Image 1: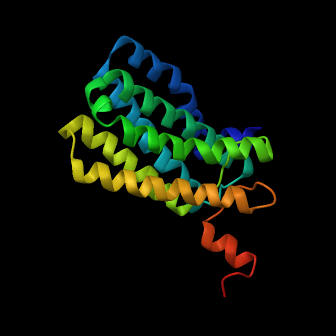
Image 2 (image 1 turned 60 degrees about the horizontal axis):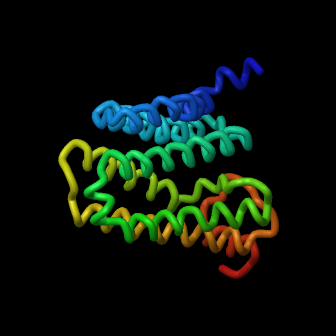
Image 3 (image 1 turned 30 degrees about the vertical axis):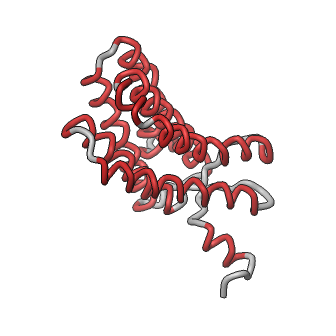
Length: 192
């Protein structure tokens, strides 16, 4: 247990889980600036936990699941924050948001149906998507909406969620820390 407590990546992921109710409160109270600040901190800790885990070889199955759970909560709060704090923007962009949300939820639901738990793949495409979404969130609240960046982030997100869906459909059992579809196909001998 002491080793677990000293594991900084897990502490950072744990922070993201613990701050979710506070972020929810900021949404409920309409505290846009505090919401944006807490979301940005959560996004930075998300980057740091993975970086530290890989750099210092602290990756564990527990850590991957904890990080994925925190990611899902952070994603949900980001989405809820936009819905309630940026109503006009969300109304104007409702179809792209609903499509992106559908693409995100589909592999998660399928994973629950097939494996009885959420994915914890940590795909390279998911990492890129997380960075792009985090940058979008930050720049939106600091400098406002940038259409070109929104559509870049949206397109990359759809591609990453599609990759996760294909992997959920192809693998016989769920596992963590999968690099991407290329590596899955390579393992099966379909790519030389």
